[in-house]
Amino acid sequence: MKAKKIFKKITKHYLNYAVIAAVMLVFIILAYATPMKASTSLLFQKITVAVIMAVSLSLVVGFLGELSLGHAGFMSIGAYLGGKVALVLTENGNLEASNILVFIIALIVGALCAALCGFIVGFSALRLRGDYLAIVTLAFGEIVRVIFTNSSAESFGGALGLKSPSFKTKEMFILVIIGFLLILLTLFVIQNLLRSKTGRAITAIRDNEIAARATGIDVTKHKLMVFVISAAFAGIAGVLFSYANKPIKADTFDYNYSIEILVMVVLGGMGSINGSIISATLITILNDKLTVYLTGDNAVFKDLFYALILILLVIYNNAPALKGFREKYNLRALINKIRKPKNDPSEIRGDAARWDVVPTKIEMDEVLSTDIIIEKNDRGDDSANIRERGGTK
Image (cartoon, rainbow, N blue to C red):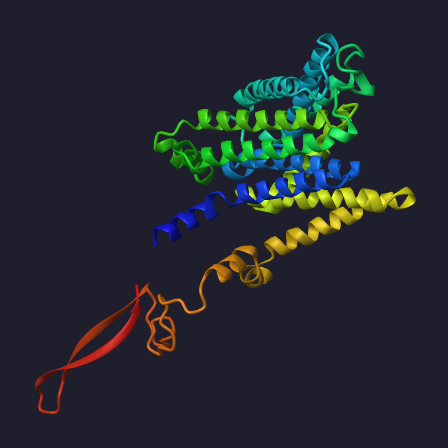
């Protein structure tokens, strides 16, 4: 029984770690066993960046309940500043671009700079709510993009982009492995945060901010904390992006990319880490395949097919008519069906008197009352006529 509880806890809290570690192990085996195409390595790298971005944004949108449209701005800060630090270290220190120490320093710088910008924006913007917060974060992302686009060639490359250091084509699989490790780090920090006392306070703010304030929760403090942590991981994803793409162009981090990350979070399910991971993976693969197959004059259909697929997914996830189908045929129901034995001793089968099959059962909001009515009989004496009546509270 104890082993069963431990297994249940592991599958509930650590299943996504195991799945990502297994995918990473398979990738390592394939990378060493056979020469991997550069396009395949680049696709995996895009997936790792998208997963980190989706999970970090899910902390703000799904668990805090605030709408942010400037997540790509924090990613661009990490990409540019982290990439610039790595470029300076490799040029002045005569170090290789694939030097792990240089990469770690770039990650730290990118995360800290993005977190600092998240604090500055969040300190003033998080006092706003709903559409107003979305407009402010959207404006922040556009401001960052314009600043990097109009920068000088000596600083951040201007419109031509920053030529940051990158891994060689043969070493690209190392960057993918690092990306998987960063996904595990992201999950470790965010999931442990959400399971802590602070995480319960964050979800309480999402459910009812007024009630959270009444219970003594510092709403501004927790909102600011979530915003800073989310921005820091967006900066980490930006550094990872800068090492795989050369040069880095500010137009890549426009508001369309922020909306694309938001779509990943919404399609995966609000407040679902695993859903964000799956959605980010599928949408990234879909975008990559549409870009490959729809070329030339057919490239105009890319956004059309992409939009149609997203519309169908939204209808499937939210249509009331499909609720029964979704509840019956989903991954969780399949896992429960496999895990649950066919002859469960806790269930009594073949019993016609079970509470859930008795047709005359009384709903919990109903009571039976007895009315005693005094009537005159034929002899003129009083007699009690008892009647039973079913009523509703």
